[in-house]
Length: 109
Image 1 (cartoon, rainbow, N blue to C red):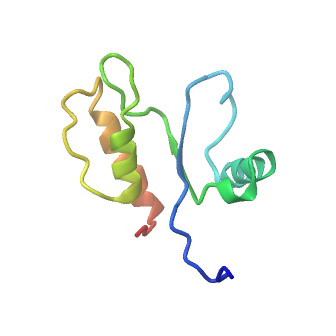
Image 2: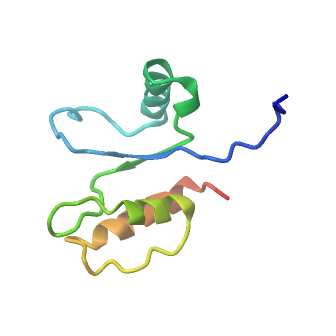
């Protein structure tokens, strides 16, 4: 029998980026938008995949060749050391994401 009080071991922390400017025209980053995203994921994919944390981002850390650095996103989400950022096209993106993370005042772990 599975204990219903088991601690959830996986936290779904997602970054929402403004990839298509036209899509975001007039859309403000807000708690209401976060709630809408959570409900959409819950309905379309399933409640188990509902994100626990949503962080909006104007840009994501990418290499000079355009690959998203998932390692850095994972470090930001978990609050661990970022590591080497010399291969990034724009290292300032990481600073912005870290500042936003601090503003969210979320304790994970």
